Amino acid sequence: MAERTIYLDHAATTALDPRVLEAMIPYFTTEYGNASSIYTLGRHSMQAIDRSREQVAEVLHCRPTEIAFVGCGSESDNLAIKGMAFAAQKKGNHIITSPIEHHAVLHTCDYLERFGFKTTYLPVDEYACINPDDVGRAITDQTILVSVMYANNEVGTIEPIAEIGRICRAKKIPFHVDAVQAGGAIPIDVAALNVDMLSLSAHKFYGPKGMGILYVRQGMRILPQLQGGSQERGRRAGTENVAGIVGTATALRLAQEEMEQVIPRITALRDRLMERVLTIPRSRLTGHPTHRLPNNASFCFEGVEGESILLSLDMLGIAASTGSACTSGSVDPSHVLIAMGFTPEWSHGSLRLTLGKENTEADIDSVISALPGIIEKVRSLGLSIGV
Ligand code: PLP
Image (cartoon, rainbow, N blue to C red):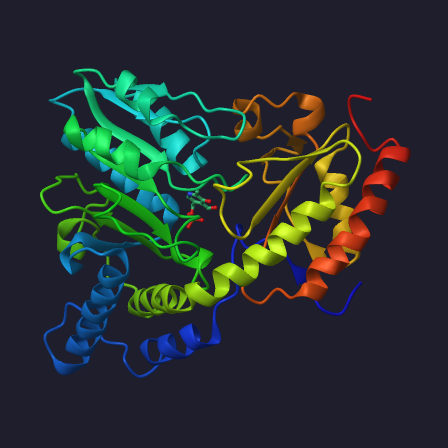
């Protein structure tokens, strides 16, 4: 086992930035007041939450009152979609989304079907791109919500959100964006994107796990999904996780401040990685060649089981992902790759390498030198399918 893990799974999660931890510590120790309490200790907590909300609003180009802190990215997606569906059910029952969304969106739409809601799944092309015109065509007089992700978590494709937003705005249909993978990786301006609701998750941008953000544009009515106190302007009951909120805002601010330096450096590393990996026989890039997240390099290798690649990389101390879902011991091919038209022979052999700000050229060199041999070995041992 190598001494240091070469971590190339930043789409799964990131390490807490030490500066974020430092900002959080007082709220675990001395500043422990309940933000709803009126004495000084409680007010300190509320002031910290207010400051955090302002920081997040500044990054996203919105008003602080439009920001709600929630328990994770999944909760943010659930609150946006169920909250809007149940608030608007007198107007209609039709939701439009895409087949490449995260399960936090797909399973929420499935759940809503039990209550009489209907879902339309937009087509995607071979690069996982959605055509905004298809959104316009899918809207009916029953449509109450469109939900499309900003960037795909498996293949990194960035969707034409501003164009989709323009179409929804013209037809007065609320538009939710799952920006969990885009948050901290690329700039997000909710006004320029014409979005009404947007979800983020702090652990994807060096913030704490178990913290999410939901932007809800002023004037949009959603029904809360947790009943209790009136925290977060009635949008999310429960005593606020002050340390988590401070950590989330600090992490988002730092990511925004450092983006200008980080993006070109990571993009260059990623491009070198993509170029070299694609020299491996029977390999393909997944996702759009240029409209993709700066840190995402994802591939398919024909006739190989992705898990075998991961285990071999792990033995060299390299942490990566297939990007696909494992259910009860059996590995299903990724719903994203299937929607993009990949056959089982290709989609089983997926590998997602997602870079972070701490990755070095030496990390990338390690993967570049190890991977061709691993693929060859896995193929020759017959740890493969469909061949
Ligand atoms: N949406 C997308 C696109 C994601 O990639 C993820 C997590 O991987 C989520 C939602 C869920 O976020 P969380 O892990 O904070 O619940």
